[in-house]
Amino acid sequence: MASTLGHALSGVDCLLIGRLVCPNLIGKISVGSIIFIAFLANVPDLDLLVGPMLGKHHHFLHGQMTHSISFSVLWGGAMWLGAKMIGAGSIKCKTAFIFGFVGILSHVVVDWFTGPNPGVHPSFGTMIMWPFSWERIHAPFTLFLGPHHGSLEEFLSLHNLWVMVREFLIFGGVAGLLIAYSASLREEIIIMWRDLLKKYLK
Image (cartoon, rainbow, N blue to C red; front, side, top):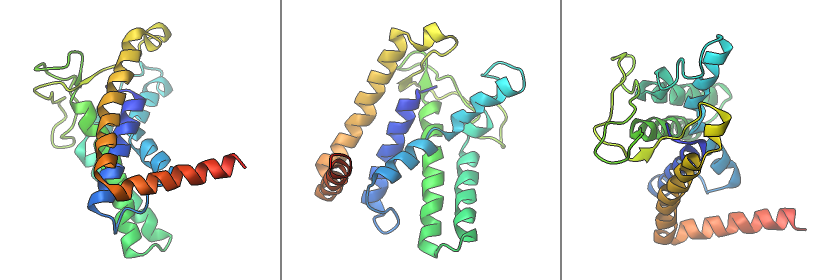
């Protein structure tokens, strides 16, 4: 599956696209919104903790229910319900759903197209259609290279460094194009960094 960095960056790309497409629902880009979407985009990989908690390998449940379209909908629905319960208005509830659904879905889609060999080779596959299918469904081609994390040596390998460089170039490139395209996005991000620097460099 893709790295934590790759998922975080894909989530940020979705945030930028959302701001362009739905400015009434997705507020101005902020440090908080970037951190939040980066976290949401990595939530499905919390399934790596389940195996060790049960005394099994960390891949025991990895790439299964949490890596499905249905889980994206359920997570978005849970965020909508949470917003509703604390008295949020209609627009904020919709925003909560969009953040939850898109944040998780970005992970699901990226991992579905992740495999050992980029190109016209089947991906690792995930239970993307759960609960309608309990089989791992493989994408017909691979876009993203999967990192190795079976051991500390693999985790710190040059292979994994290349995986993250590749993801940074892909997802960072998409973000760069979006920012270059939109003057309003550029302005919001400049203001965000300016305010951040003022806060910590006083």
